[in-house]
Length: 411
Image (cartoon, rainbow, N blue to C red; front, side, top):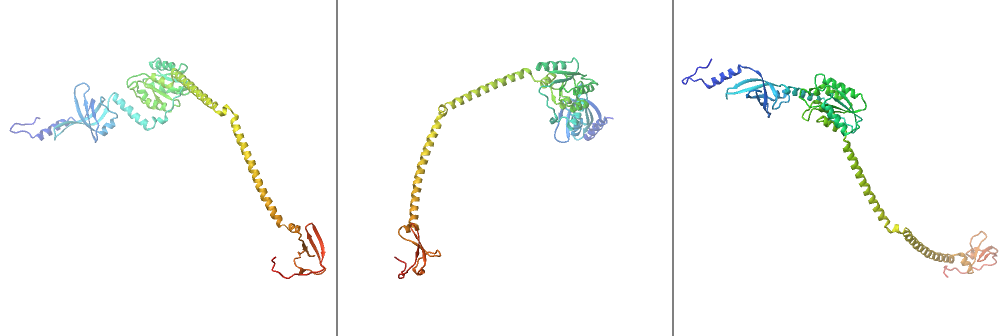
């Protein structure tokens, strides 16, 4: 029922605002679909986004919480979503607002949210750890290729691989690259290549496509099979903008199937240029080394010692002769000096020798018991004495003694 009012009997504003609030809230919460055209993330629990109808020029501003946005998964401007909103009116300002209590991506947005959730789970398990990535061989014996038969991806990989390295062997395993059987066929093909010891690297290649077409390459079972493979795996799915989960778990990611050829085999022309350049640098280095050694040899040959090898010998011989002469002179001088000292010592010794005393006419008298006779008082008449003279000995008999007066021993 409309409110009764007149200029003389107007309704209070609070009553009108309350009635409007009641009319709006009788609608209750409702699920609506729309496209996000503006998303504002800010500090605090309350967040704002603008939702527009996909067909009509109708847009509304929604308020929600950070928890609701986080639960919805990755949201961005342009994503089509289903939002559970509750319209209400703030009585203080009379402003109509829409409170979003739940939001879910639709179409590709829903698929992207599922892929993002799966990606976070696998990342938490460590399947994307770069430390676990296997190195690609420099020149594989065989290249394994998993792709659809007669596809553009097969043609691109084969042509560019054989063009870069004509002698390479490519072992192809065909599989459906989209549809419900794609995942299992790719896993089976990978298992067959794993059993071939000659296969050193495996390429999984597919051209571009829609998000739905590339969904098999974000399948958890395929991702785990690639993670468990012992052979390095190169993911070449779609174009540069396509990023299935397979790209994250593979040992290397190629932006296109053509780029995969660059990753798995070297370019024979580039390698040949590298070899030629290495040979050229080696020749230059060897030539420079030879020139330097020749210059050093010429410098050595220019030295006087090499021009006359006997010169140093002569110098040393002359020095040796000089040292030998000096040694002889020093030795003769030392001998003369020592001979003089010896002669002087001999003369002194001879002067002090008893024999010299005997030569001057003295004699040494010994009693019968062998003691030296120095006093007349020690002799008796008739004693036999032994006299030591300069040229021999004589036996004497004491016939008489005549002692002299005592002296003090001075001459």
